[in-house]
Image 1 (cartoon, rainbow, N blue to C red):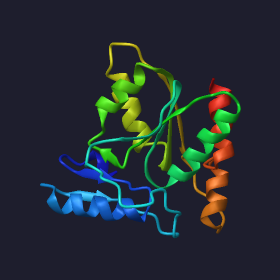
Image 2 (image 1 turned 90 degrees about the vertical axis):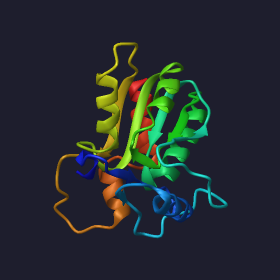
Image 3 (image 1 turned 90 degrees about the horizontal axis):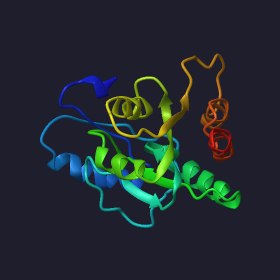
Image 4 (image 1 turned 60 degrees about the horizontal axis):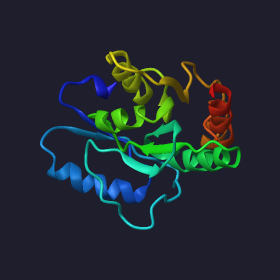
Length: 186
């Protein structure tokens, strides 16, 4: 919802080291910033604090044909899904977007020249989040448009008390489920 506010910057770091880097960048940033952070001691993706810029995506893996677009704490699962896909002969590019807004459209533009399938992955609703912003960007393009699959929380409530891992399984946010979605789409 905060993505809708004019001038709002929305950040979604993957791990504690990205939180630290983006907090420093936020303090230098002119304007309001919202940061969506993990709450369950998520694993570190980086060995040291990365050099992140607000509004810039990070290429985590090179690839062709399929581009996994990630934001937030699902990055370890996306990297694992890329490994599973590689074992099946699919060399997926992995682009990590620690900034949801402003969206790095230059990175998307570059990826669209080599990838015919975009798969957005987020620990958020598929409605109104990161995948929605990519769909909006794709809808405004007159040129070639990669197909988009959005992986995230469905537009429904979980009617049970459960651990985060159970919710991730329910919404297809495991590495195996992400890889299967890609293989089905390919």
